[in-house]
Length: 447
Ligand code: AMP
Image (cartoon, rainbow, N blue to C red):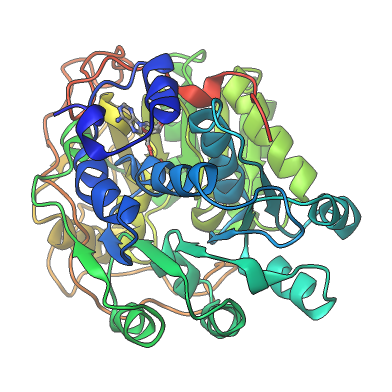
């Protein structure tokens, strides 16, 4: 199945062809036709599945083929949980929309409001915003939402996790009732269903039955290790190939900073990205990582949302996430769009319980391979009552996620690579068989 049959205009097809996208991913196949037809959508899709294009293409089509553009009343609003995801969506919109006349801007905190107000005054079609800063603009009446025809909620579950429900409700109440609403979420806790019932018009539910082919290309490995030796083991693993781009997850901001200091002192070019960093520092860390100036990026869960890096070969969990679903989000950073990936977790005895939760969520075993010289003094326990680290201590989460249904996750391979850490070459095509070029590697075209 090619993109031609999805009802997209030639200017968008041309942009997709420019980037070597030949076949839609399953979520694009399912979501684009009803979205182009104007329906509301409730779509289950994780990051890495091609979900951004699934909403961006119908949106660009609608805006470029109907109505006025560049007015002071934006015609579309896209809400994302984090600044990084907002920037990523913006970049994708610019790329997919390079042959159409549609403008977009981002609105998020951590940077001054002045330039954002100027862009809004000049007129823009699409606003991509995080809820907090959007509320600031609403309160200061610097943004007029009365022209919004399309509202998109990206990673809605994460927005709820971050405590944005009250903000979302106020924003939803402030946009016109007559509109199209597209809601994308990796999981569907009851609060999302309630939101959808309250604010959407007879939404089509999209769930793609084909397992997420992205995840099937990710190999998982656990290295049991004593907590006190994790840093040494991490350094050992990273030093195997110090030119390889590695994303390391830390549960806390403080822990991330400590790791960066340690790794930099050990000669690895390392940067951190987390919520206590200024927006400029976050943007710089990300672009240094993308350009290869730093090879190790240490991130906390929330800050990492929206990181989309071409062929990221490895994600290392320095500590396991406190909530099993975050493991799925973390490993979504590797094995993206058909590339192979490796997810490595350093697990100490006190994290055995978290590992149990993750295995249960993934419905699979994960290879447990001690690394010679770093074997733990006590084996991991893999039963339900296994120990868990104490909560708190700088975690970012404002509220714990309630138990919810399994994310739409395909079976992930448990195969260990023979040499452990050889960076997977960029083998393997996209889920849909594409040879692809990444749009967001190129300089922005427009908007
Ligand atoms: P997303 O889930 O939107 O973050 O997309 C994950 C990655 O897949 C991004 O790097 C996109 O550029 C890429 N992508 C999206 N759609 C396609 C497609 N049809 N073919 C190949 N790559 C794609």
